[in-house]
Image (cartoon, rainbow, N blue to C red; front, top):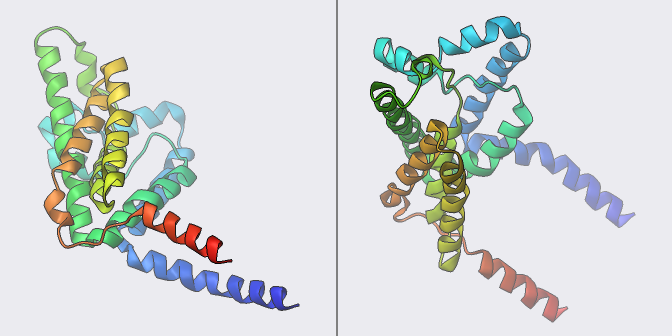
Length: 229
């Protein structure tokens, strides 16, 4: 009976805890809300019209030359896939934790800078490849939308959230995760992702004076509690 009461009380606390979490990362969940709305549109759009629709909002060379500000903003609000659950998990794991840790202005600065600069670098490489005849001119109008560059930058800056050797392990893991596809495929999107990681790592000053997380300390405390029992 006592356990049932405890479980009931715990369940009743869940909505409040969820609400407090969302309020602690308003930028993350506002962005997710916008992605949910645009994902709803994408999922119900005629496939024959979808490519044209997304191409008009893509950060490809044609759009960057004609209306750079509009497409840099619009491309971060649209995706080619409508898998909202995946975005919800990734945003909650990385964006929300980074926003809670750094604060909304600094988190947004990292995400926006990674999105913009990684896009410009990767599309600059495409432009150079087209000029030299190494790449087809069709790439100038390719569909390139999504939130992955911003995510990569935020994933990288979270390296400084960890303490001690965990920072090194996490940072190396992030670098390897994004470097392997670049080495294997040499696509401009993989280049953009890796550039976004390097950009995120450049924001080490944002971590000064912020709390550090030591997973090893948590493990040691759990072992000590078990030993006491």
